Image (cartoon, rainbow, N blue to C red):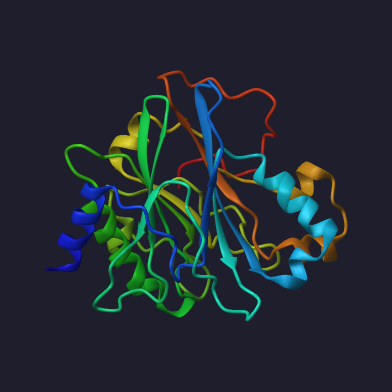
Length: 269
């Protein structure tokens, strides 16, 4: 059985598997009757005992998490400083089979439904030095998951898709084909210090043209939103800012009330 066939089998079975070796936790909250949900990704930079014991940092992380309905969290470590291997997804999920070792960290696929929006998230943390080769493999994963019954596939996470790791403007790259919509614009900064756009959200045609709320993809600048002025403290929270996008679940594009607006990064890149 090929890896493509194995993915299709797992998708069809609705397998519930913990994020084994993926270093990823998917947390979600009910849509609460709203007509738009906010989906985000956040590399929280080596979340282990030290960070968990910092009450100030934990307070900011908790406030950030409450800004989203579904949040992909990356770089969670256990007490031995290894990627934790037993986190429940609270959803139908599985790690992508990778017999050819195309990924340093295999993507996690999870299924969610909010109102009329039934979708699958593909979360991955791309190895920096292998970004050019891993991202085409990620495109193949998306193509395999998407079928006649499930076209809503959202790819997100720390893709390391900028600066020395990847030419983000390379139109010849397979993952830059017209079928993939990179809604986090190249001009925004998702890395706290370097100014690079490492973190991304990529949509397929169907989701981009229907459920995606145009211009909603942004970087969530928790420093600006929460009035944090100490650069050192901002860096202790993470070396990344979260990215997010909003999606209609009832056909209406009205933005949910009571949410922070986020910072720049509104245009489709």
